[in-house]
Length: 70
Image 1 (cartoon, rainbow, N blue to C red):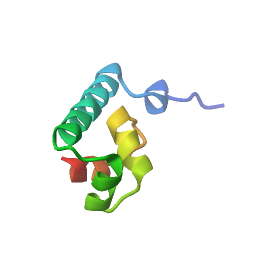
Image 2: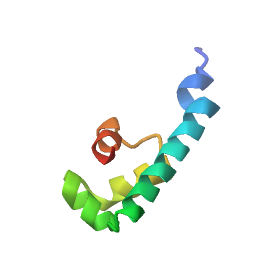
Image 3: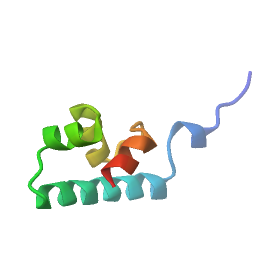
Image 4: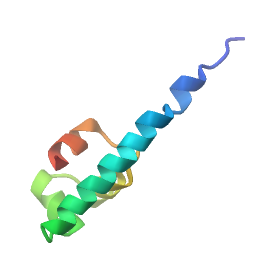
């Protein structure tokens, strides 16, 4: 029986913290521009849920979404 690598299941703390900080910064930038989540989703061509997940710093959000928001 093979053992699972715990590093593949959960991200390192530094990665998790950085994504949360990036998400908070993206949200602040969106709010400073007086854009709603719906406006931003329409601008980058994705769904509202993807924007909300990126602003929460979720690891499952695609890198393309983060790049488009930047």
